Every structure is written in C-alpha cells, then in structure tokens.
Length: 147
Image 1 (spheres, rainbow, N blue to C red):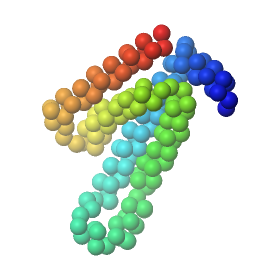
Image 2 (tube, rainbow, N blue to C red; image 1 turned 180 degrees about the vertical axis):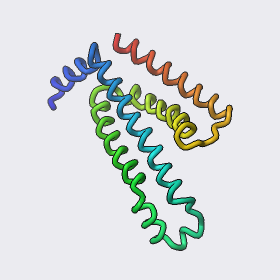
Image 3 (cartoon, helix red, strand yellow; image 1 turned 90 degrees about the vertical axis):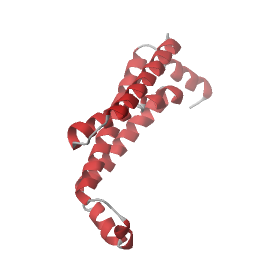
C-alpha cells in the first residue's frame, strides 16, 4: 500500500465507527485466546503432570499430548485468535492494542476458577484488579487519542 493511501486508511480506521469495530475485534481475539488457554489446560490435565520421568520417555509424552483432542482444539483456537489479532494490528496502534491483551489475564483467572476448579487466593484477585485498572487507563488514553 502506498504511503498516502496507508495514511488515509489509518485515519479512517482510527475514528468513528472504526474504533468500535477495532475494539470489538480485539475483544474477539482475546476471547479466542482465553478459550484456547482453558482448552490447553484441560487437555494437559487429562495428559497429566510431566515430570522428570517424562523427560526420559519423550516419545510417550509427545504421543499423549498429540492424541489429546483438547490440545488440538486449543491450538486451533489460538490460530483463530491470531487471525483476529492481525486485523486488529492493521487498525489500531500496538501501544493501545497490546495492553488490552491484559484482559485475557483477568478472564483466564476467572475461567480457571469457574471451569477448571482452580483455587484463586485473594492476593491473586488483587493482582487481577490492578491489571483491570491498567486496562481502563489505556482505554481512556485511546479514547482521548481518537477524540
């Protein structure tokens, strides 16, 4: 794309309805990544803990992982997430988009608690709240940038 066309494209994509679509695509990308993480963890829970003994029999470990469907589903969902992410990167600055990936930390912790039954201590929830506050600040700075 020529420089003047690229500048026009960026100007259009960065304002008005384009901002809403861009943030929506960002949320979709993060959602796919979160579901991917939960699927990968569920798959590895089924495979079991890989300890030092697993390192001495790598073929067995690779086969156990390779035959777990939730692992493949998680990897495929990461691929879908990456496709949405590429669209997001074509539309908004990386300095705005990447901090929003922090949403995944929040939703993954909640999902681990809800769907995987993991214990989440209070201090971890405090950390999640700090991440959420940071995302709000980035969102506010993006709003000011776009008018």
